[in-house]
Length: 193
Ligand SMILES: [Zn+2]
Image (tube, rainbow, N blue to C red; front, side, top):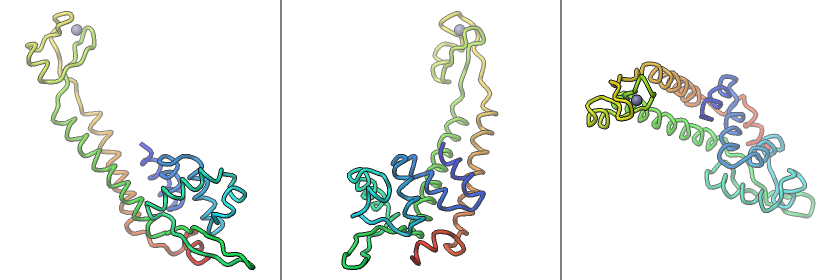
């Protein structure tokens, strides 16, 4: 549940930290380092990818491809002395959308899980601990085929509460992100660089 780490990130109102967590989980540590470099430096140049970031060129290009598909970075050209560098910059409005989409997707999954937990009772044998769905328990007359013990329904109260807590945290993060504006943040400097 890396989304929870994102929630922690949002508590300090750090959009960048949040996106680094998600990118790291999706595309690996090198991708996180790349995003960090772009944020601090304002851009990364394809020509200096390996020397500037320490990430192998092929791997760096692969990551840039992936995160550009998400529109997290956008291409640009930068004239430096007599050369033209092909650079990538962070796209802060897409960063916000990207995070919101991830959080909403996680929330949807939890809603489905919650529904499933609430609708599908689980029966447990108090003797051997084997667990059965309602359908299977019913077919066995609510007795354990292993030792003939009478099955008891497992309380889903704790699990329901845990899932509800996570949903609440995600809602909190989604609200913060929705109200988040790109000003007074490090990403703004990147945009203006
Ligand atoms: Zn049993």
